[in-house]
Image 1 (cartoon, rainbow, N blue to C red):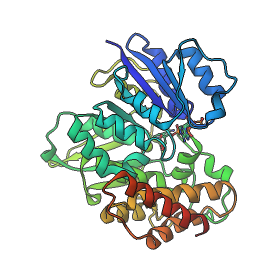
Image 2: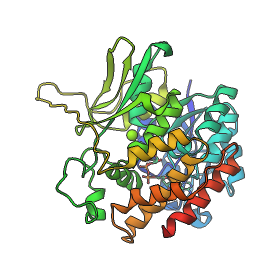
Image 3: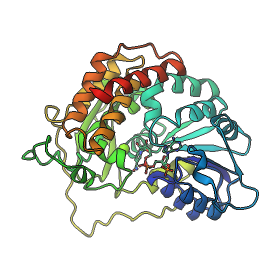
Image 4: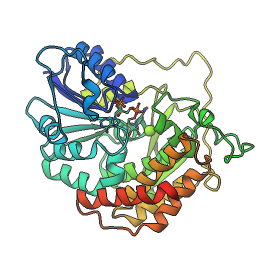
Length: 378
Ligand code: NDP
Ligand code: MG
């Protein structure tokens, strides 16, 4: 049977890889709806290729004058979007919107019992308690697209939870971790955007350079696998071949590996529990391959310490952590602050914003807004 997808963030790095997976398995996967931000030309071109039933652009004028396929409805509000992702003609919602805009539609889709292929880490970082509680209630499955979490999900497979000791997230370290001679207050935006192993959107690439990406992933892993921060270790693995590992109580470790290509975790989530041929390169062991592991430098890169603090604090601190980081990354990209100030601003904002309980979406969004207001001038 065909699985019908709504793709939120279809024009981005994950979104376009998702559409390639759809093309490779058009007998199994079809597109019901596509969502983007402001790039109406790219969204309309996708609509002409994949013939969705509906489209939504967060910037309303983005689709003005674009040539669209017949019978393609253009949604005009967030409410219409929420109704569309919850409708019967959607089986799975893939969320790859950068930032907070995916939170409400994803939460509502979960309440409606839809399966979610989740790339946007912001959703669990901001509202992990709400999202996991809603999924437990509705029976919606949250399938992790983020490569590390997808690796852990694959390694855990059918193993009973009480046999799990801890999980080990691998991190490439980004362009700066292996270069202690660099002064992090002087590195440029272009240097930060030159990721050594993964090709990704701009925001996540900067997050990889600060290790904030791994901080966000720590929090995401805590929610996905129900673990406290002291049962999640991070190790720097510059080759990005091992995507993460799971250690069981007998100290046996299972790892999932492959060349870095998001098509694999995306496809795994979309065809789960079945594995199908995937358009990614197979590992070539006829060439020598070195894999190395080193502990993260938490003094030079404080992001992981901040993320662990966020996990222990609970409540709405995840929303504060995420919002402050988004603002600081944007300020760095605008060349307003040096690279080294990104994590400083996050720490300062976390110290300045009182932690709310985060019991509902309104409280989470208020914490997000307050953190943004503070971080803009911090
Ligand atoms: P990109 O910047 O490449 O793409 C972001 C997408 O979100 C675009 O389609 C963009 O539309 C859309 N968008 C932005 N704002 C809005 C909005 N307000 N409403 C609707 N859509 C919006 O990001 P990535 O694909 O790299 O990352 C997406 C998410 O996946 C992030 O949360 C990231 O952390 C996560 N992720 C990414 C990985 C990767 O390899 N890239 C790996 C693991 C996780 P438009 O083009 O119109 O601006
Ligand atoms: Mg990742």
